[in-house]
Image (cartoon, rainbow, N blue to C red; front, side, top):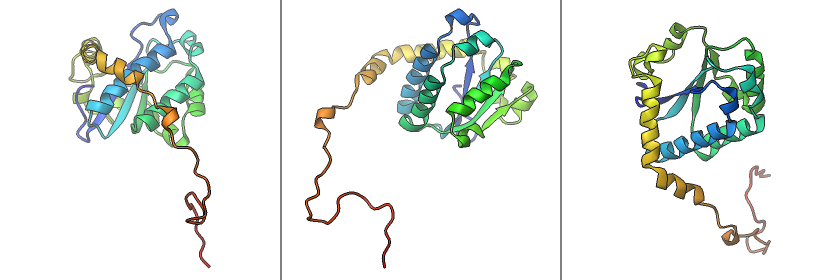
Length: 199
């Protein structure tokens, strides 16, 4: 969402824009997420991210297309490479097979992050933890609707197309990496001390 919360947190809405399971690809979703995170790394100043995951159009057919390994790698990239802080994940409009989804998340998430998952039965419950002025109109907020916000985000991504292409070409030059040091005896033992016991 374009507006930060009073605590400088960014709210991210995750929702299927096309309910056709045949059009759903977890790989495309991850690519989109990485592009947005790449831009956020350069331009965003939020202290953390709160996610609203809307399962309104999610079906069992969508669930079969989820890959736990890809989800785990995406979460690792999000937290480690992009240094993002997942403050909470708020689920709304959960279908009856929610236990399978949450079991999948429990597999790929660290326990600390899994503890930040919250289920909301209605929008009033969501409004207790998220300010209305930072939510789109479909969620009882004062911002414009999701489609308008998505179009604005698409414009931002399109304006940074060249930057994104260039950033994905950046790779480490492994031939320049310094190899393991050899013990030379000058300073005793090479390496670092994680525990040091002095008698």
